[in-house]
Length: 106
Image (cartoon, rainbow, N blue to C red; front, side):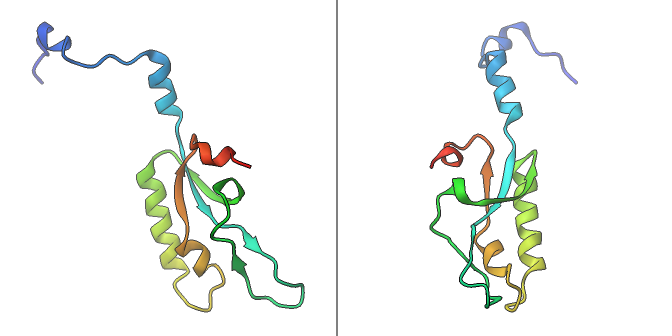
């Protein structure tokens, strides 16, 4: 490994420690739309795809976006059958950063 010349360090952008800490704390949620209860007598599940993200359900949490995307793919594959009630939910699933302001909307 070659040492970095002193003059090259001046070209690197500086990041304040609290910004670096904030970046390190961002995680990812795999979220699915909220379930809509149609009636007590039917077992059919439907989902509210137009609901704000603050109403969506966190299916799982991850440290990195690529981990979340991988889990989304595996969940879609695991619920491929048309008869699976969660197929539609995982088809609409989204990976959302834990600091996304849409999670706080009412």
